[in-house]
Amino acid sequence: MNTQLTDLLDIKHPIIMAPMFLVTNTAMMVSAMNCGVAAGIPALNFRTDKAFRAALKEMREKANGSLGVNLIVNKSNIRMREQLKTCVELKVDFIITSLGSPKEVIEKCKPAGIKVFCDVVEETYAKKVEELGADAVIAVNSIAGGHAGPHKPVDLIPLLKSSCNLPIISAGGIGTKEGVDKIMAMGAAGLSIGSPFIACHESEISDDYKNACVEYGKDDIVLTNKISGTPCTVINTPYVQKVGTEQNWLEKVLSKNKKLKKWVKMFTFLKGMKSIEKAAFSSTYKTLWCAGPSIEHTTSIQSVSEIVDKLVGIQN
Image (tube, rainbow, N blue to C red; front, side):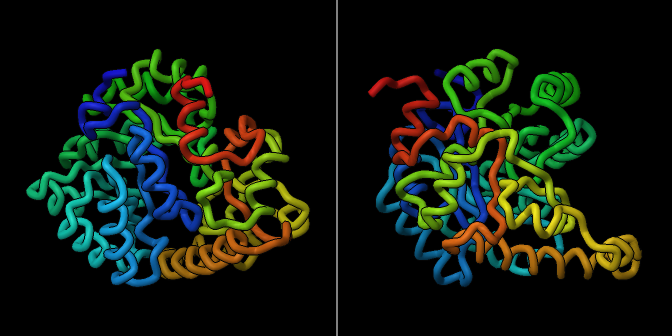
């Protein structure tokens, strides 16, 4: 299928394996890129710049395809400039920006020929990133995993198409070939798909986390703001039910204080990251496991290549 996204990234299928915090690893990236889809990995999945650089070089050596990196571009990510410098020096193919202004990223990446895609949830921000020079928008809808947006894909895609001229990459809720076709028929340039890849053989998360993606479905996904202060989708395990999904009274008060808000959000974000990290490598349900409603279509643990085949309609 030839689309704006396949042309932008020189890939066979109009799909990006979405970057997933503490889930995506180099093995998943290599497998996805060698299957003809693009793949993105969060820079924050690496503790040091040395490890980040080594991983990017390894992926380049083992895969032929479009290599992307997700950068958190707000003040909570104190390593953003270092990560951006590494991406430019090692010439990744594209960067996905999240949770902030992409201005600096676009300014550094344009001269290097690196594409910049920006997460958006509504038309106002889409217009802003278009003016800044973004190459495409990642349309994060209400059924996305992680930090979901307020609009359903059937509403968000037409809204963005009417308000900006950038290619639209739909993110959220898709786990089948039928779903891919439906989104493409709406006029999307491609899709960013994450949750269906969580339960893959190449992932290094715990077996319990993978099995939860198989055993739970779309009705078991809930929003919690305990992780980062911003609503995030998690599997509604017994532990989540026990601790609840809302901030306590003190967290709420501090989050509303204008002077302390920035620092409290940073603290909550960092504290939440540690919670997710523990969840990703734990062998108990008493932790937080991020996922989106598209785990509804995860019926077994498969390889990345098998998941790609399912999404593009290749029968095995």
